[in-house]
Length: 106
View 1 (cartoon, helix red, strand yellow):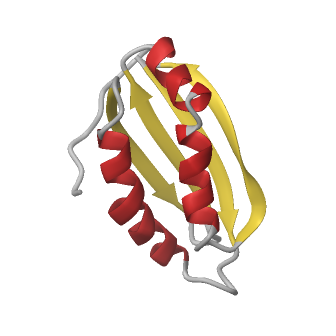
View 2 (cartoon, rainbow, N blue to C red; view 1 turned 180 degrees about the vertical axis):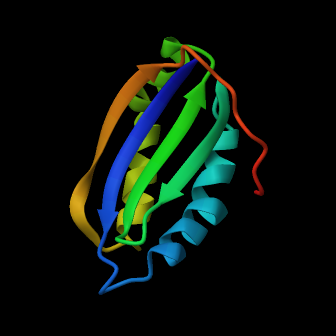
């Protein structure tokens, strides 16, 4: 399993970060669910507007396919039309080596 982590900072003075999270749930989650190899995600939000989006993929190949196909950038663009960022989103990849996920509310 591979985790892709996108970090961004939303300007909480100009926009409520929770609105961006709602937009993510409404628009991006359904699109993610249609991608081959997608295995779920977590979105973490700090009081200061820092956001971490962690998506899980069955393999490096399926994770890479979202970038090669342009899917990842198109999703960033969808949010960029709505979200006021303090800094541009950045992205990193990690191999999941231990998993003990707790059940969380959707």
